[in-house]
Image (tube, rainbow, N blue to C red; front, side, top):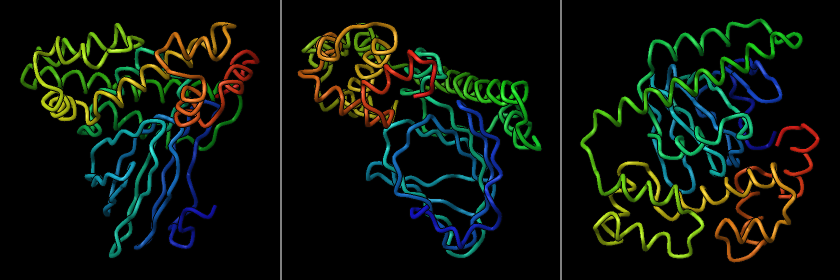
Length: 276
């Protein structure tokens, strides 16, 4: 691979991989890096030692040791590790098609990092301790551990939101967006139901979700379209129109940004039982 510093890896990737889920653990020597790369899966990363600064779509974030950090499909990422000490981290990646649609929507609103809960720690340790994946039974265990880890992240996210101050206007705006994503004037109506200006809504939205309303809307529209590609025989242009896209080209570009594949490829793989 040309986009990571293999000379600075303290040990080879310790991976437990199936068609849907990957767990891994790795140590980088000082100055190591990974990326730039396009994220295709939902990924949870925990930094055990050292330091790591990540750039996602031009925005930098520092990974705190001992916390779970969430990365979602479509982000262009570059990881830079400590220049002065080894850095060790573990991760779990899950294919978008393997997560329930409701989970994907909730993850798009979840915090980008949360404290590591005791259950999340045990789930991560259980899979990394696998010697290797041998056969169907081992693969199913690894995949269920991956799902359980993301379910725990969502549970912890709900607990964190419940403890945060309520923002009823933002909740109404989010509910409207989730229920009416294909409306041409969805964003304008969100402002009305939130009872605030566009700039105020953007600030509140980013404070709660880390995303702008427009970015979240296009992700919801794209995921609706991906589900229709898998579940219906409608032509791509009609799916694009039903999901609120102005044309099939824009829809196809958004689909590729999230999944790495074209609408045709997604449909072919879904109907043949393969992974997107």
